[in-house]
Length: 177
Length: 445
Image (cartoon, rainbow over all chains, first blue to last red; front, side):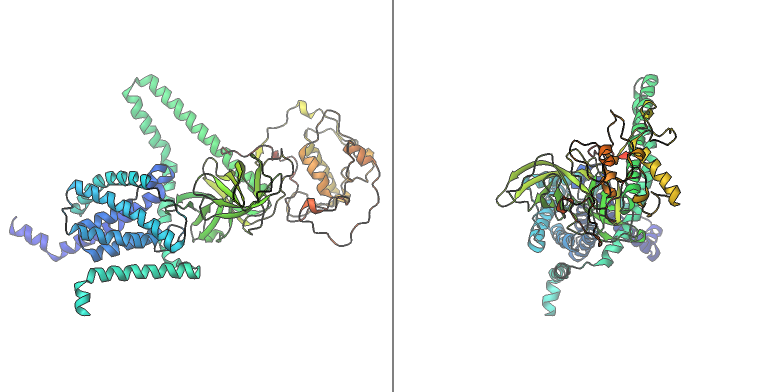
């Protein structure tokens, strides 16, 4: 790398522009995921089991490796999800906060670039997300929700399968940004 | 303390965030209040994009469909497959157009004839709850929508508005596990509470085991919940069996069959009559125009022959003529006709002005309903034709000086003449509209 290129890349204006781009992606991608969850299942009903906001949270936490940032990122996505549902605000927020924290903590100990590890983590966090939401709904709201472990495991596998190409695309976008 | 916070900074932040959200939930649950600011922001951010997506989808779907069809055609025999594809597209397009037109027509007919004040809305998105069944519609508080309003279709109830935002509203469907509404069965008048189950079926709870409910029986809204006006169809019972304390009655909500696309939000509900007859099933159907041969029925004496053919048309003609004499236009606005001055439907009117219907002609439901609702026709004895009853002089009966409020027709004094229809009840349909509740609701409407 020439001295000119190095100076250009590390110049403050370019760095600021890159930061802004990343910030825009950080806001737009979860919004797209939430829009997908709200809009697409109207036409393809089985896609309602795809938890894209969760996968985005996991991807951010695994890539960022900072528990505090991941906590706030997961909380924000969860609160927006709560806002679009008819339930007290904070249910998805708490669950996704925990997912963000644990995913960021795990990423400091494992090689999360490995696709197998990514698959397992996505599967695990989906199951954790559904189970913990069920526990919160029963404990805090007293709702008689049904938790079907077999179905949750199956959808966990589906979400993990979707997570692999999704994370790859998001990584490319991050590099482009 | 500083050492602790710096060493366990991540955990501390996590705990603070979790506790803050727990407190937020506790506040909402305890005070039964919402945090409208966050919701309004989120909904305002998401729903315009949804509306845009829906608009784009509606206008580009045909092009996309064409594109995919043409891709398939190109790989096969071009000419034949192209023709086949075009025909399929045309067929599909016409079917969908027909279906949309039917649905829209049924909705507008229902809206026009319903005494309730309603606003039409379109479903634009689903809610995000894990087990909840809520949808967003494209009408909000700027259209007068408020939380707690009933959402219906001509086929039955759909749900209720739980949150109204400026440009959109959140509607909880009847299948939501937290949904509840007061219902009453058509035949045996068994009251219960409709509850959603998160599935296609709903449960009618709190009906005693001793009460009788049949499979296939219709349930209607009872009006007890002060959300849904009385008399709206809810659904047909699919299975009934006794439970520990209450019956377990399952029904399929009739308003949601075939999906929910267009709905009516009830700004001001009016109670309706629950049909007594078993054969009287809810639903609206556009009847075909009467044929020429059907018009060869004798007209009432002294009236010129008319091209109008149905009983309802003749009744309307009578109303119109009487309206001209009274200088009022019946059926338009809220001016109620003075039934005592309408010839032909008052029992005390000489038989010459109200000739008996021709033999072989079945009296229509409109006529059967219109006569008792007028409140002045003497009830015919069993086996006596309405014309004979009209010719018989009515027995003098003391008329009450004060209006009698009758909430249920079965509670009324059987000896007394039928009371006039209350203002809140569904008025008799303007005859000749070609709309009659003649068939059970279907998802195609």
